[in-house]
Amino acid sequence: MNIGNSVVLNTLGVPVINSFEHLCEQLSITEQLLYFLTYKKEYCYYKKRIPKKDKSERILTVPNLSLKVVQRWILKEILEKIFVSEYAMAFVPRKNGLRENAERHKKNIFLLEMDITNFFGTITEQQVYRLFCNIGYNGKVAGVLANLCTYDDYLPQGAVTSPYIANLVCYHMDARINGYCSRKDIVYTRYADDLTFSSNNRTLLNKVEKFVKYIVEDEGFLINDKKTRYLSNDVKKTVTGITINDDSIHVDKKFKRDLRAQIYKSIKSKNYENNSQILGKIAYVNSIEDGFQNKMKKYVESIITKPELAGDKSIVKAFNSNKLFSELSDMTFMDVDEYSPW
Image (tube, rainbow, N blue to C red):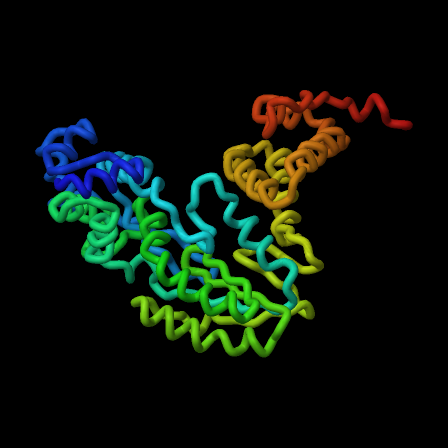
């Protein structure tokens, strides 16, 4: 590695790596293992199918544990030390991307949403190689790092490095799109493959679609025309699932209603196997609506005093052993017959 590259890497705060052997030392793994993870990738991934809302399936290409550990090191020690575009909302450390994405558009009347087709699967190993070269690594090291982060010549949807790499690759595209939008008083953000535009001028927003498609295609991506949609205040406006009507942001009411029903059902049925899922949903809403978690605690407190629940010893026992929030008071058995007026 030449002195110039070392200076660049030191300035960025990323590890100086000048050879395959040096990378092994940084990772604290053997050369044999790194060779296997780099050049025998067909043995290092498995397919995982995730059902989508439209009843189709999303196929994830998931790395094995050894490769995942190496990718996480690359993510934390190298990639996340490089700034992404300020218009990239998803997968950015210490940024509440969902909330900020909605916040940026809440004051505008008109909304345009566009979607990139096969987002990760369009970014090639060659682009990832150039990314690591641009960071400052020599060709050999950049090739190994790119190999570790790609599968079958593309970014695998399922690798921990893919989202951040995608953001870095899209830096130039984000700058080009926003360069046009900022001159037209249009707000632009990108949440992974979802592009969102908003304005108080419907005419300007209508004109931006064609120009954005040109830039996206010039950058090597394709827009999914079936998912392009225009919204205004006369309908419910949502940005990545968050409602932004009335100059405020909140999670869809049906989502919260279903969540309350799920909590009630788990207590009544004494089935707490979905506690982690429920807590995740509560945390998600709380990240958008401050104080929601406290509302859910009060909701649970109101449930456990209902005679039809508190009058069943088995329900009381199950609740006290599986509370969503450990700080909640125990459920107290209520002898219904004792309080009966008859």
